[in-house]
Image 1 (cartoon, one colour):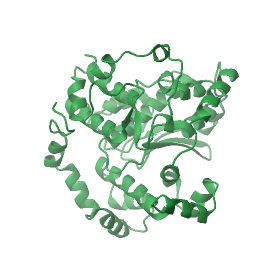
Image 2 (cartoon, helix red, strand yellow):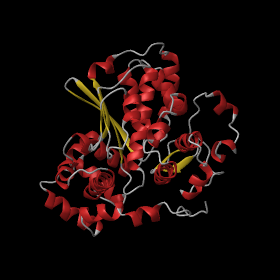
Image 3 (cartoon, helix red, strand yellow):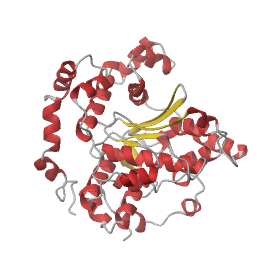
Image 4 (cartoon, helix red, strand yellow):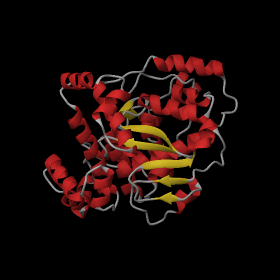
Length: 372
């Protein structure tokens, strides 16, 4: 069955032609409605009524279209509800396969006509805010290895692991479109508990899939970044670059949050390093953050808390491992900080999050604010 999200709204001629028309960047904490459409199409393919899942997630089935923004939190709720209703633990894997270069609009056009795969991935890294302002894409190189990661920074949202799973699948699909349909990463890192059946992951990625990880990432040879993209058209590339340039920029606090979230993947957080990366003096950064009603320490702590909650909720990593990932000297320091941030301990928060009563309440009909 087709969901009202897509069936109840006719696409404009521009959308139908896939001409790459792109709206301005999403507001902070929002993503493109195309992700919702992908989840609904996946549910329909599984024989599940999408409209009921939308309403249960607090999303109007007749509201947003594929190009309209929706909150990152609402999409996460939808994915969690979709997993719960379908009983399919790899729902994110299925939804991610519905992403294409065309679905990324102008950004997809620019990636398609980039010189090399590295240029295309760096374009995605830079302009992701056009369709996703709840996470950051980071492409790093360590020796002979490249790591393309996806890191949500929305605190305490449902379905974060499914967000990550969907994003890694979408990124793999896009990389295959740019290079080779048979391409496979060296390994895939997924920040979630291993599902009962990991076969669907192995079949799609065609590579070792490591669950219970601290980050969501594809690992592949760094030499791949220099591989040229066949059929790239420099004229179309310049046109897409000019259009996307109109949407560059962003709120300073969000720019810092994105920087810290990607930096936390690779190493130690530092106010000085953040200022240098953002090309401002450290005192200037502090002054501008103060004018925005915050400070470096607050944004850094929010970033650590978001990661802590995701790892506690979706993995079985021990407190020592999580503390290390968040750059705490020892588990006790992490526990103290987490209690200060939330009023409870990491262990208690994890138990409460996973309790059958809490889970049942979260997925009870109408929890999204609408009748199913």
